Each structure stands twice: as C-alpha cells, then as structure tokens.
Length: 401
Figure 1 (cartoon, helix red, strand yellow):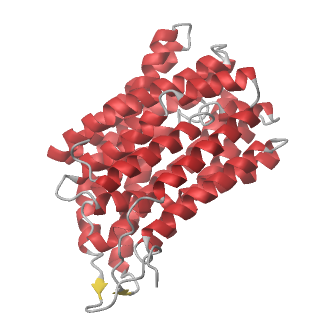
Figure 2: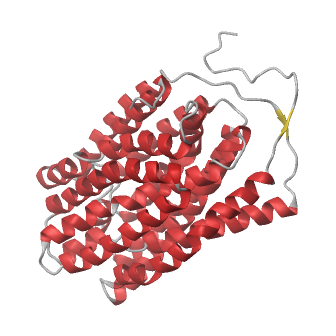
Figure 3: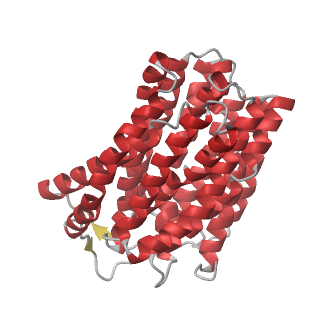
C-alpha cells in the first residue's frame, strides 16, 4: 500500500466495493442460467455473447480514454454496470437474461481507463507492481462475497443477490467521484500505418492464443462441480472465495517477480492455472480439499491478465496508454468470448472435456509467452503519437467553466 498514491488507493477501494457486489453472483451465474431453462450449449452461448459485448467494448473505450477525460469514462462504465445488473435481476428466462448480461459486460469499456488512470498516478513505481496491487483490491472484494452470494441464493433467490450487488455498485460509484480528474493532451489524429496494424494484430493474436487455453476450463466449472461432483450451490460459491484469496495472494507476488523479470511472472501464472485444472479434475472425484486448492491456484489467471496488460502498456507512450490497455483487454476478452462457446460444446460431449482441453493447450501458451514482450516493444515503437504543441487541455468534468 505504501507504493500507492491517494488516487490509486481510492481506485483500489472502488474496485474492492465493485467486486464485493460482483462476487455475489458471478461464480454461480452459470447455474442460474441453467435454472432459467438453458442447456449447456445455450449456457455457453449466453456467456459467449457476454464475452462478445466485452470484446467490443475494450478497444473503443481505451482509445476514447486517450481523448476525453478518463473520469467521464469511469463514471459511464460504473453507471452502465448498475443498469446491467438490474436488468439481470428482473429476467424471467435465459433469453431475457441475455440483454442484461451483455449490458453488464459492455460496461467494461471503462477498464482501460481504470488501468490508464492507475498508470498515470503510479509515479516512478514499476507499472507491473502498481497494477497488480490496485487490482488486488478487486480480488480482495471477491474473497467473502462468493460464499455470501451462494448462501443468499440458497436462502432467498438470485433476484435478491443481484439487487444487493447493485447497492454495492452504487457505493463504489460514490468513491470514484472523489478520484482526481486528469487532463488529456490534445493530439493530431493520423491513420495507423499498415506496419502498425500488422504489429498490433500479431500482438493481439499472441495474447488471444495464450488466454484461450487458460480460460476454456473455467466457464462451466461450476456446472461440472454441481452436475458431476454433486456439490450444493453454497459450496460452489465458496470456490469463488478461494479463487479470490488465491488472486489476492498471488497477483502482488507475481507482480513483484514481473517487475524484475517481465516474462517470469506470466510463465508462473500460466503454470499455476495448469496445475489448478489438474487438481480440479482430481478433486471432482470426491476430494473437496483438492478442488478447493485448485480454485486457490486458479488465481494465477487473474494475475496473468493484469501482467499481460502491464507488459503491453509498459512499452507504449503515456499518451497511448488507454489504447494499449484496450488492445490487451480486447485480446483477453476475445478469448473469453470464444472459450465459453467451445466449452459448451465440449461439455455436451463430456463434462470433463473443457478441463482436459485446458490441460492439453496451456503448454502452447507457455511457448508463446516469450514472444509477447518482443512484439509489445515492436508495437510500442510504431505507435508514437503526434502531440499538438501549446494546445489547451481538454476541460475536466469538474471544471466550473
């Protein structure tokens, strides 16, 4: 915490409060979609559509955050998230649930602005370290809420869970209001060159190929534990708590490792996810303690996501940070869009198939990881902005005039 500025501490608190609401439902959401009448393929389709909305949100949000005050982007994302969760609360079947989850997922357009705001306030502290510490606030908010959400769903209903989440989001929004607005430099826009498009496209492809294997075993894991292992919903909610504990403990550690050796943190995080999938497969055979350990180690996934963004944005200029974070998040979200759809079809054939697919493919991502740093450097050199000298800054939303 001593490495964080005042604004980054506020951001950490806002993310903690947001995750306290999101954790109530996110880990048991696939089971709820099943209760709303969806089969495994339809569950995968709904989650894939949510991933599509998220994928479509990140890059425009990142580019926009380099051009208008980022606080506007932050508040817009927070408010749309509240609308999305309320829409999910009033759904009557999986079809009416789908627009709500897509709205909620699209609210992630503010994530690049979050990361860019954190980077702006980082000072001289290594970006990988600051990013992982601030986002550890998010994971800390998810420690207790999944278990609480599972208990609430068991005792009441999912509508109550979503409504309580909306209250948490409202408090989080109030915290964001206190974050200091930062000026945006005016710049001349120019069309990206063919070389820049090619470099960024290859960079996005590498990140996609790394994260698809990491995520394919995740979306239907709650259904796997419910339908194959026979676990009750409240115990499955506890798995989310263990995941958050793992992320809270592992992300800062991997961030410190990446501050010294950028690639090693990503390699270690992917290895942890590979081990977690193996333990989950074993633990589902009637060994709950092993399954709990699996979800603790799966915290390596969230750390990998933060580290990939820091690796890409660390090579970009300060004026292009939003777009760099947007590119990283778009690539990860693309994997999270495709993975649930594939997982749904694999699950239909064999419930354990998505887990086995992850075990088989993660080593490919490990082999691709050294390419990420090299390609991020190439893309960063080709994306230098043209700054307009002596131009007035874009007015802040808190300016009186």
